[in-house]
Structures are given as structure tokens and as C-alpha cells.
Image 1 (tube, each protein chain N blue to C red):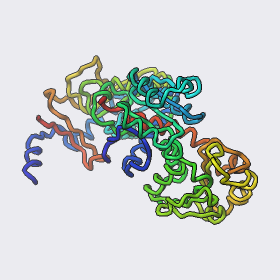
Image 2: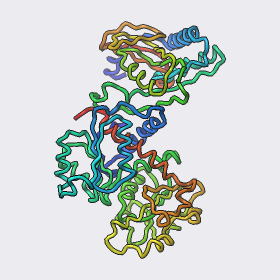
Image 3: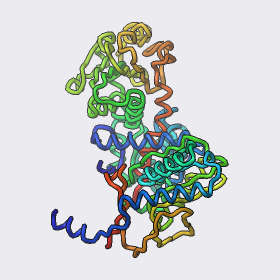
Image 4: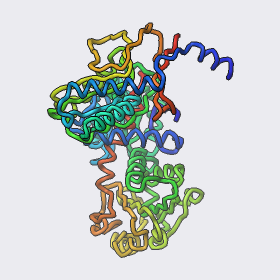
Length: 308
Length: 186
């Protein structure tokens, strides 16, 4: 195993199988810390992390903050609302000013695809992409992979159906790259308006959910991102649920030990029925717990070694 | 043998044979037993990597001699190292697993080589985050001197005279395929 050499974590696409495996293996040891009586290690003492969230987030921001605290880093979180972004300051100016306060790493979420790559090119700090538009959300794919390894013991050979709004989903993009690199067999399923053809070389594409989840080991549901929909991609949420919603009856087509993932936030009764979200097959809350461990692993690998 | 590996082999001196390693572990177990009348109160925690198999062997000897079960744990001290900001690459983490309470117990920390004492400092800091043992003791297979911190071992297999630049290489069958300890002159 070669060590970690990346300065930033911008996406899954540029990572090698070894690097992905290193993050997942490191996260296993980080997960153990969360079960200790004292959930804190001194590893990142004196290091500063800025969490810059230019777009709404509950889980991801809380998860990064928790990871930073457990590793003893100093952190501060800035949200677009209430910051000078609302006065019209540009992303670059905001980051340049934050950088002048000498943080070691900046975790950034932004509504524009490529925002994290842009900052990595123009700034000196280490950048962690916490979701950029419909591009990538690497820590989400890593925590999904961690959760699958925990539940299934492997990723290679798993039959995974990713169902929902693939077009607008950075979670889907990061997961398609991760799962296919690691040897899973991926099927993407969405209405024709929400299923881009660009992934046809990596995954099987399907417009029918019953067909997509047939024999699946894993069903990964995606949120219908109505806030990003600029035109009529679906008729109604009710119609969408009837055609693409995951119900217990539909889930019976998958393997009997199927597990269900959802990156949150869920639209209960739209892409996923409550009976599925709250069923034994659902690993949705495990994903949240594991997210902290995976983000600890990423911060450790980016910052745990020498200063540049 | 390549010229390079021949040159390397020439600088190695055997310090302990496999049989001597076994004897040293047995004597550590005997000494622990003599100190600890209540074997059930003792927990053995090995420091990654080679402290872990050593801990298992000491625990097995105690179990054999006393007929009582001894709790075994493992500790990876990487996240508590004081030189993390200066080492170049991020060390790969190994398992920390202490699946029992250490409160009010005697914990025997086990490592292969005691050198600067910095690993043990990190291990002590980490261990007390798991609870409050009534006593922590230290057992090492080799004490090679050159301490940088006021730390000493309670149970020592062998003491080896070294210069600061030397390396003491402990090899254990569980990890390295055979038991031996060699001194590498540099």
C-alpha cells in the first residue's frame, strides 16, 4: 500500500483504488474511537479547519464539525446566509480572506460544479469538497462504501441499483466512480429526463425500477432535487412515487438480504416510502454515523502527516 | 544473496535466538504472576505492531499457569504520537481494540522494544482515555536504553547495550515467520 499523496480531496474520479481503500481502512480505526468513553484523540491539535458552506446542509456540516472535534482540530463554520456572501462578496474573495487567517484546510460546499477544483487551483489551502453542484460529493461516496463494506464485507461483485434523480446528483456521480473502480456492478435507474447517457460506459441504464432492483444486493435511493429542477423533469411527486418510489413490495424483487441507502435528506413518500426507510434493510442512520469516521479519516490523511 | 543484502546481513548481530525469545516471554509471565496474586484483575494490552503478539503470548502463559482467563487488548498509538506533524507520510492506522473496562484493573502494557520512551508516553495518554486503571505496568522484550522521557519498564526480557544509531529488530513468528532479535549496526 502506497501512502496518501493527494493535497486535496476534490472528487472520487481522480482517486486510485489504493487511495480509496486507504481511506476506508483508516475510517475503520476512526470508527472505533466513536465507541470510546472519551471520544477524542489529540491528533490534529493546533490545526485549523474552516467549513465554508455556501449551500444548505445539515448532515455534512455537522459531520465534518464532529470529525474535526474528535480529532482535536480547531474549526469554524461559515454559512452563506449571515456571511458577507449575502453582501455580494465573491467565492474567491471570501476564501482568500479566510485563507489570510491561515487555516490548514478548507471544507467547501457550493452550488456550482467545479467550485472546489477552482479553489484548489487558485488558493494555497488544502481543499475538501463537501459537494459542488451536480459534480461530486466524495465523502458521501466514501461513507456509502464504508457502510457497504461493514454490511456486506466487500464492494467488488455487489449488484448496486442507484435509483432516482441521477441528473442532478453529485452523490450519484461520486458513487458511480467509486463503485465501478472497486468492482461493483452498477445499474442507474431514473425517468428518461433524469438519466444522462454519459454513464452508459460505466453502468447499465434503466428506466424501470422493477427491472433495476431485480436481484440487487444494494439499492441506493437518491433525493428528487426539486430545487435544482429548472424545467418540467417529472409530472408530479405523486406520479414519480408511483413509478420510481421504493416500496416494500418493490424491494421484494431484490435479494432477500438487500440493504437500502439514502444520502439524506429523504423525501418520504416521494422517492422512498417510510416503510422502507424505517425497515431493517435500511442503513440510512448507519451512513450518518459512518460519515463522521470517514471524514476523520480524510482529515487525518490530509493533515496527519507533515506540514507543507 | 545480492551484494547489498550480504552487506546488510553482515551488520546484523543475533541478540536472541527463537528459544531465547520463548524463555524471555516465560520469565516475564512468571514475574507478572508473582506480582499479581489475582490474575483475573490483570489485563494485557499490546502496542501495535509487535507488542500485540507478545501480549497474546504472555496472556497465554498466564492462563496456562493460573488456569484463569486473562483479558487481552491492542493499542495503536499513532493518533497520540508527538511527532505526527514532522513525519513525512501519514502512518497507516492499525487496530485499537480494548473490549473490556480497564477501570480499577491492573493493565500490563506490552511492547517489543523500549527505546526513547515516547511510544509509551503516547500509550499511557491513550490508555487513560479508556478508563482509570488502578495500576499500569510496562513489559518489554528488549530494553535498549537511550530514554528521552522518565519512563522505565517493570518487566524486561533482556537488556541490550546499543548506540543511539543502532536498530534493534524484533522478529516474531506471527508477523515475521520466525522468532529472533537482531542488533543492526549503523
